[in-house]
Image (cartoon, rainbow, N blue to C red; front, top):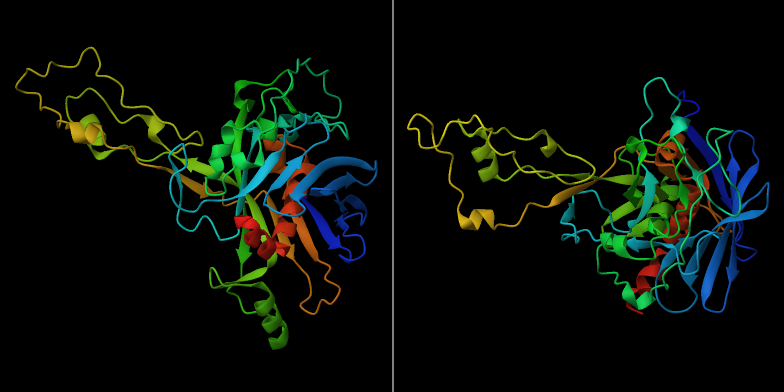
Length: 397
């Protein structure tokens, strides 16, 4: 895959909000509408549909409360009732239930996060990266990679568990608490939305990945805009909570990387001591799994500690052994999977939005989820940034 074909580039154009609140996703090469998002008002929810324009089929629906409360949920028409992907504010400080803590500067005010099941397979050397792609089982449109795959395996689906109530979610809890919830759409063992190809190896096994949506702050490069235009943007996008001026509604969607902490000092000293028969394990290097193993036991040929010529390893006190383990570091991937650049003019009377949406096709193929999902998530976050004040005001409802 060459650099020119690695990315899918789309133009985002929204119509007048008072007219039909429709957002078009236009392919930059063909100038054709690939998807569009339209809004409907229900009795209790505001529902938006992401529609595949050539087939007029709904790929994803977005749900928000119509009156009180705060939530953003994404689901596919093929999911069982009550199954969805929630997008929640990210907790910047404190550990989650797995002991993870965000690295300094990784999270910006206004960030949202979610978790989903992915196929974390890496393409082998000399093979096309599309060979690691899986199929999404949707009632709208089935994408297959390669174009003529073998028949998929038969899956036995079990009924989904009852949907949890909205009150069971606390916005004060870290996003990682959602891993055990039945509302995790692509995590549910009874849904199995992502189908593995029959020839999948252990390197392409399903895994749980966390993703972060974060606004893009203003660039430090001098702007070519006029003084009045810059003043209007500063007034429109100013965020008092962080004292920064956002770069419009621009943002990135990146995968979260989990790094294992270094071993405690007393473990490192004991493992490195002469005659201990142990070395620091290679599994202590940072990994996505965030797990590590302790040093291996001494080899059978290790000299006895009773020999005077063998130094005694440093002793470990009870307080050291009982001390809590250091937290896992959570960092944002330096290579975003999706990037949105707000190109809306400063003098915009109609209230419509325009921008550029870029999806890294190589990364999307490795993760094994069809591209319409990432487009839907991107459009959802654009809407969140546009109405951020209303969302924050409804947190206490």
